[in-house]
Length: 305
Image (cartoon, rainbow, N blue to C red; front, side, top):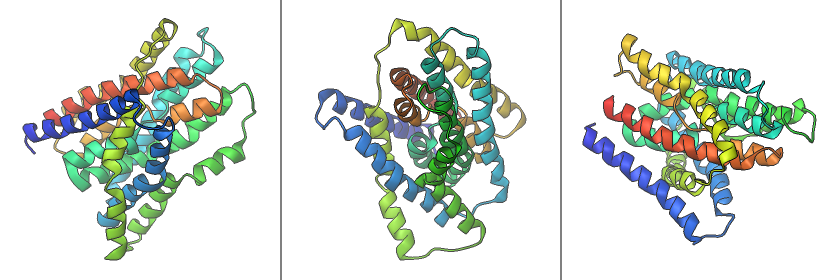
């Protein structure tokens, strides 16, 4: 694909993101619109997009390396943040939000639309395998962290596992992957139905990202935000510099690792922070900042390779 076409696709995606932001600012829609659309994506169109990938593309077991990277990169970033922030004088709720924001990436809602437009179903399969590992961090470790930094409740392991096991996108990953590996083939009506349901995912996901953008910064939060952003992108920048020295950038696996490692903070940072009475505003600002930074890094990677 030529750089001009890639640039056009990226530009269109960015326009949709800022359309969502503009619609929110102009208050054309009810205040609960963002939450409703987010739930619709998470429980309807995103699972359909995941299922479509595994129903129409054969998984190569070599792609498990992506699942490993999706998991280990989130863990490494969290550990770096934990070591740096544990001795600071920040409020407990602010530390908790920072830890959640550093643990995992927004792959399904952010990466899927871009990857599908630029690299097609093959690219989507690769980033989906990366997201399988990432899902353990986003819906497991991050939720445990939210409990650990909450002032209200003690850690309830049963509730944590229940939340992970009952999360529809995660379940869709596991079931679809098992069926794919087992050689189960879907034809006709089921595949067409899944594809039809998944069609709005790209546009809706980009729109919702824009709808959640927040540019209001308080001076007291800027230092913590900057430190968090540096930590967030350290692994991705290192991979961006080193991987092309040792591996071919023509490999979709290498591209998926580089792209996955620079994805923005998952939207669950806001959800968990709100649920556990942490710093919701900081979570929103962190998501906004990482979204903007990721668009820049991702555009460079896609245009260059």
